[in-house]
Image 1 (cartoon, rainbow, N blue to C red):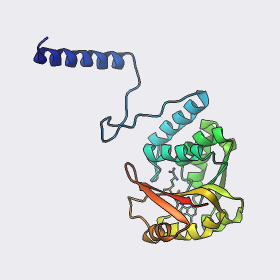
Image 2 (image 1 turned 180 degrees about the vertical axis):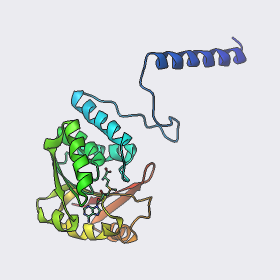
Image 3 (image 1 turned 60 degrees about the horizontal axis):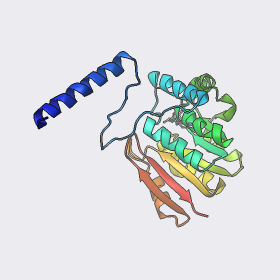
Image 4 (image 1 turned 90 degrees about the horizontal axis):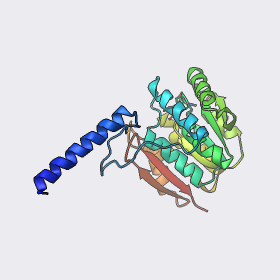
Length: 229
Ligand SMILES: C[S@@+](CC[C@H](N)C(=O)[O-])C[C@H]1O[C@@H](n2cnc3c(N)ncnc32)[C@H](O)[C@@H]1O
């Protein structure tokens, strides 16, 4: 077959395949699939995971408040599950989207999420989302100013996720770093946008006890800080 005919044949075959997938209702990809963004939608391995992913998809249709992107949320799950984290502390529950990503990991590690928020309305929505996902037993929500409430719990932390008010990031680090266990992770959201907290970035990049990377490929960006052993 000549090259031009081959190309035409391939294009027709791809068009037929796309049409067949559309007609049979096969899952479509929600994000661009190319070399610059090879990530595909998460695939559920079991019914429990499907229920959580469905709850995330539904929550993303509702009112959002600078919640994590899908890529950032999946990174939270991947790090938490890889670390076999038992105790995750989150500052900034909001409507619970990041909490749902954490729960994908915690149902496997046997751990719990302790999450803090100051806004009663968002906390109510988060509770409903956790219930819908069937993960309410994995999550403890505390309402109030996290600078006061979070340090009251003095158990060692495997993963600390900072995602409350941006000017407070460096204070949260001072308040909770002593509780993060050696080998634990401190993750912080919004390292690309809106304005990241410069004092926080300074603190996690100049302390010899810490090693920090910035993952800025998608969404608002996350920093990953290892508390060295
Ligand atoms: C960006 S949202 C969190 C998004 C959430 N982590 C997610 O991805 O689904 C920030 C949240 O921090 C909360 N917040 C702001 N200041 C706070 C404080 N001092 N203590 C606790 N929560 C606070 C806000 O009410 C808001 O819901």
